[in-house]
Image (tube, rainbow, N blue to C red; front, side, top):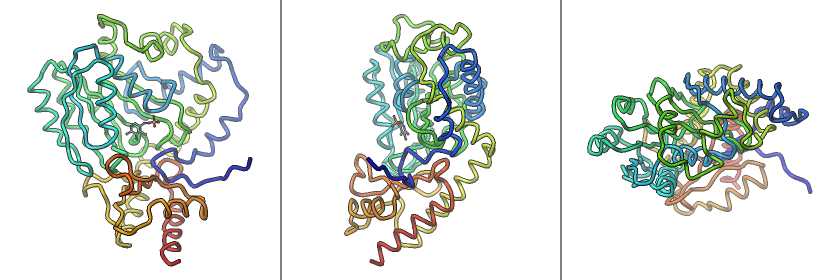
Length: 365
Ligand SMILES: *Cc1c(COP(=O)(O)O)cnc(C)c1O
């Protein structure tokens, strides 16, 4: 079977960095081999730099970004806890569902799709319910291309309520500052701006979040995602829990290396510059952007489709004639929008030039 080489400009996965592709080819090590454990420690150290944290409990959870989401909720929520969730897109909705399945009473703080959440309304909801276990927010809402502001939520540090943030699409694409923003629990995914294939969920927990797991009256509902047990392998005890996805960790280590060699700030600046160029040139061509101005993610552009645009036909032509993948709309934007990712190694001028050139050719045909 012949498979194609694509330019991946959807909402994930992005094209892996070249260093990541070669990391998969290296011979395997055992998951308890001292050399592998050194590499695992170094991966955690690199994750701390990218997350902007000194948190000891920082590790790649086995599974995609959604496994990171589930790990956060099942470890921090006990049945009957109140969880306040910001909802302005599909991934905020998914947080509500995962929180509910973890036994939480969910309080929603909403904003219309395409608009950012008001952090003050999240703080007000917590003040109205000071016993709430968590305030949970998606930093980069991939279904709409909106950035939700996290920094003002640092005020939660002075309360009993923890701050949980989804950085699946933001990490390594735009600034994330876990310690400065007082984030207690943060998860991400490898397949977006880290430019590693899907399969791991980087995660970090503050000291008080770790303490909270220790003080649970019942163990987390998930055995596989129990961070107390996983911590005994990733931490100094090195106790077997489940076999680490070794080749994925080689790849993540290499992807983090590519990001840190470029420099985090340089990588953010590259995403910003290339994303703004795409958005400017799309608007010049008459496209309308879904996300409100001032809260647009450079790494994920959601384009509202005008009446008469052949959504599926155009995306199929991009894929079949030009080898370019972009994403369709999700949830209430299904059939009404495209989602164009410029993430990690895909966030290059050549991607913008190629995509716009292809769209121009298709429009002229
Ligand atoms: C992609 C994404 C997820 C889920 O990640 P998977 O790798 O698909 O499991 C969660 N949250 C956000 C904001 C995402 O963009």
